[in-house]
Amino acid sequence: MRSSHASRLTAPPRAVRHLTAVLTLLALVPAAARAELQIEITSGVRDPVPIAVAPFASAAADDKGVDVAEVVQHDLEGSGRFRAVPRERMPATPTRAEQVDALSWKGVGSDYLVVGRVTTLDGGNLAVDFDLMNVLTGERLARQRFVGAPGAVRNAAHRVSDVVYQKILGIRGAFATRIAYVAVDAEATAKHYQLFVADSDGVNAHLILESRFPIMSPAWSPDGQWLAYVSFESKHSAVYVQLVRSGERRQVSARAGINAAPAWSPDGHKLALTLGGSGGNPDIYVLDLTSQELARITDDPAIDTEPDWAPDGRSLYFTSDRAGSPQIYQIALQPGAHPKRITFGANYNARPRVSPDGSQLAMVTFVNGDYRIALQDLSSGAVRVLSHGRLDESPSFAPNGATLIYSEREGERGVLATVSTDGLTGLRLKPAAGEAQEPAWGPFGP
Amino acid sequence: MVQQRSVRRVMGVLWMAAVLGLSSCASKPEKPAPEPAPPPAANAGAAGAGASSLGATTAATATEQEVAGPQAGLLVQRLVYFDFDNSEIKGEGITVVAAHGKYLAANHDTRVRLEGHTDERGSREYNIGLGERRAQAVRRALLLQGAADSQISTVSYGEERPAMPGHDEEAWAKNRRVEIVYLAGAPAPPKP
Image (cartoon, rainbow over all chains, first blue to last red):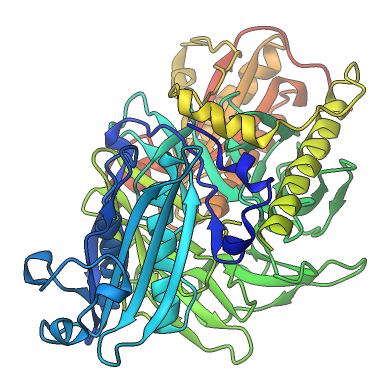
């Protein structure tokens, strides 16, 4: 397969330069099918937007059999905010806006229609073209082309979903993004830990690391190229950073005691970490990846851990039990700064994650005997509990800030789940076998 | 626009590679220059050839050798249990830890690794802190009996390695523990 990166460095024909969002999906070979996650929609809005996604014409022999319309439909329905018109009820199969008879689509109860086609370009790349129509007005809302290598057709389909979602709902879609998660063999003896990266819909899972010892806390670099994580492969904890594309990795911290909870700074130059030292007292540090300089941020006999950066890079949120029970604090990254307590409501608030716009804090909170995912408004202090499980943990924001992914227990096993920040929509992502935990939602692609 | 973005991204890759090259440099002084960035095109292209090994790393196996250790009396007991969100050694744990402490004090060429664990409740990284706190409580108790610091190492697995599957109080009570693991070889040199 030809790389899309090469084509990105050459000038596209002038006419298509501004229409073309070039694909950069990595053509990674999926791991065993059992690693893939199956989606089950658990909740949606009461009045989903009716939309028809007509089958895309494919003149491309090498599209890897990807049904673009099916991927788009799956994305939109999975969001809980759309209801798709079944193919058998479609009055026609147009592939461009000019062929659409709007009235006939209104007749099947659809407000919107997506039509498109996949074609082969000179040089072997594929183009995915689509039009989004408002059937009620006959207006064309979007026309766009995505170009990439044949292996990137699925990613192109997710990008179509992103545009449709934004044009209709006014929020940037996060379908063309990836998630990292840890899979664990269900058997209690001889556990087996695997770190995977998959598309946001759980497809294209590929293996990043496997070990007989725990793998924890995957964290994406802001450019989506790297994962930081904790591995116990040497029977002590160590933090690594690994290039997702090639598997090349470096150990960045294997100091005495705990090495834990890596979090990339918004500029990608630093990692916040938890280090325990030989005395076993976990505190927050910031490691400069260029200079290797290590700055101590907290110094308290309590457990200080789970740092996350404010989007402006000027402060860290973290968990500490300095007041007796775990609570979330914020500390400015200035010499002599003192932590400010942020959470007060429950007697257990941990694992802070700040929304991309810095206005909300997601966390694990203890309510009525259960651990749940909650969202605190950072200006008003108001807290809303979003999840409904017993042992929900590890919340991570989608890059559009509209959805959280987290882990929960379904019966005896761990699965992944999402919930929109308005609490209205959700789905489950379940591995075919074993458990999935510690999801981390990657950034937007370039 | 597309081009500007892509150039910026490639610069980002180069920058990161330089950073990581330098970081490897810090631990391996024989490597004076940052490693060149892998060309993104070549890497993405190679993906098509696509072994499943692409991007996947198999973690190296740990090297420290575990041994059976002493078997007399209380010393066969290697587990110390704790209450929820608590790191105080209680009940039988006190006598078990004291026996191991005395054994270590009398056998200076013996080493142990204390593995701290929690139950599955609460957040994972906080539980790493809690497991470490339990391991440190056992370490201090061993030192009080005359064991040397160089004989003891600690690791916390938090909730990651439960001894008992299940999601009820019975399983949780078995999982809130410190495991005393005897190791082969001489004590580590004193820490600087």
